[in-house]
Length: 367
Image 1 (cartoon, rainbow, N blue to C red):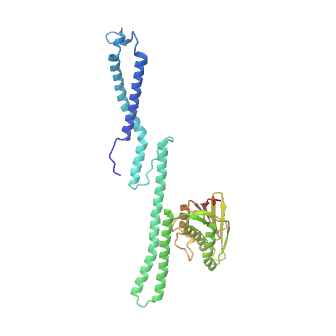
Image 2 (cartoon, one colour; image 1 turned 90 degrees about the horizontal axis):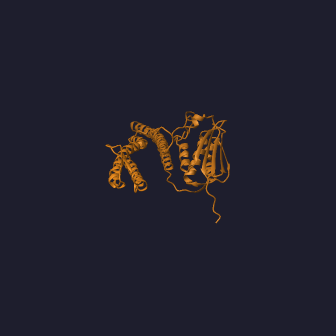
């Protein structure tokens, strides 16, 4: 926004200090004149030629008092301007540092911090809040850069494979078309799944969806039923239990959240004979969805990275179904978009426990 430049805050504060000082001085001089000097007789005033002399009270009137008052006011004016300018500068020094940090951040350098010293006051609270905002913004930008780099790498892989297959087909006229088409179809499906996952992740991050009353227990049952063929193929048992868990949100996104958790629990399980437990429960003010699975033992350090996009973990790459690497990242984004929390913890006997806590829906009105 283009605005005309006005007086600086320092000048305004200086003028305010001076104005207040001058008003106070005028009132003080007026009080001295009214209550102390007016009507007094035998008033003694200093004189250079004679150390003391007695004057008529009429001589100590406006002709004597006004020049002295003007001299005092002039001194206070100069003193107030100088002192007000210095005081305003000291008071506005934190604002100057904050403004400099803001300009530096606006130029793209988010590592700048104010770190205002001294005890806590309004300026220091503002500076600390600004430092916190810069730290969060720097972390968010770094996360977005990593995400963009990883997404570009993941999307480039199927495109590169497609290019290789097409080059082979063009240079080898004897290649079997059916086999080539099937490979291209597989690669294309993976690219589509990855693209849809990226779009879903973006949609969840933006929070652009309609919220209605949803029962998480129904979402859990539907996800378990949908993924039952995959679980049976891998020899995995799915067990569901729990209470009715009403919350407010987008049904499609919450179903995707539940499906991703259950799918992750199936594909990262024991080679055979594993189990997945899906439970829902109600607590004061919150509803909880918990998905646990058997599997290999996971370190807390590894588990803490699983919600990052495309981070599957080195121990979890040796599988025939690694997916897009966005499953738990999507769960985390959907949970955050619904004002909830996602907690991942390793199970002592092996496997992973994922706990989603969402705000409970208000009870239905009786009327």
